[in-house]
Length: 191
Image (cartoon, rainbow, N blue to C red; front, top):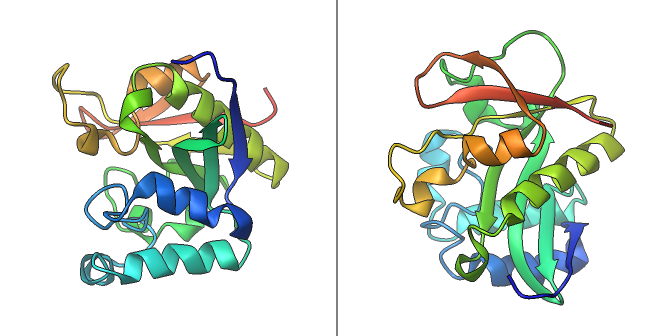
């Protein structure tokens, strides 16, 4: 990575254009706009052309700050979505990612780093900043659902929830695994 210092900021109305710039016209991944776990599946599928972008923009305009942006200088280079688990309807319907217990946790649902900045530790820094952000909003615990890559050359689109190694480097610990390639990890805020 260049010698430019990274900075991190919650996504606010003023920073929406930066998130749009980072995601590009395709919404980071085929029109998702980070809404796959926030909407019922049929609504998400239907929204890929335009509505998912509008849905995320509405969350931002409502000042719900759905995640953290990473910047190299003034350039937005990464994103980490984090919110209370209850906001993610997709997690509610998952058997593999069903709640571990009755603790109120926040969830990291997505990581996206611009291609020129991948494999340089940006994800680890974003994860740590997302935990700090969640803690500043009252979270005691943050949960994550990374994938374990099945190959070294796994396409980035398949790693949208992050990879296990990045979360372990960021201080997360595995608490449960119902699937071979999808552990549930947690980290307390304030550590």
